[in-house]
Length: 273
Image (tube, rainbow, N blue to C red; front, side, top):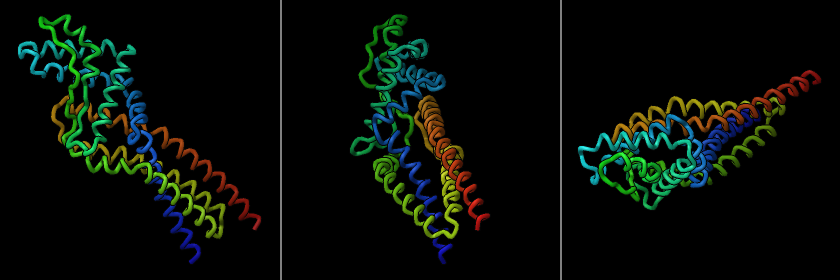
């Protein structure tokens, strides 16, 4: 019975640690506005993200009613080229940060929005002077230019994220208590410590698989409003998923070190016995 309880405690610790990793990352990098902007700012240095954002900025700018239909393609192309030319400047960094800040602010507004939109106006504003210089009409920079990138209702996702911080603290507490109980109940305690190290490896691997197998399927089921909106949505989703990898690597390495070290001590202890 004691060993069964120890195994159950280990299972609870593993599941709770898995939950703590996901909710902790979500609380730090998605729920928190500063964390979201900081993470998204790093994504803004990715060339594929820049190219996709530039294409979206061009289409959104050219789709404005104030842009004559005959100039649509010219305006879109000019904006795309101008934005790409400025992606290495500090103006781009500031504009991208403001775009991500507005996106987060709208997503977590009360009540939550019915869709996901990116306000591309700051990015357009970076290149507006270069674009109007090559067009036969004078077009001011828009104050707001929200573009739908997903028509999927984000309310359930937002409600979950709003509880991410408290969920992370609770999950970590459960993992700690269950892990301690597992060690106290186990007949071979160093072996149980090693198994808890393995729990960290399992938890990290679980989130890696979720990011590669589950998230892409969820994204594919969503209906985006435009091709460029879908492209930006997909690229950002892929990069955000990948941004979790360093955390998973450190968790897995720490777990492996604990598992190997405690496993070695367990072998020494068994030989002495």
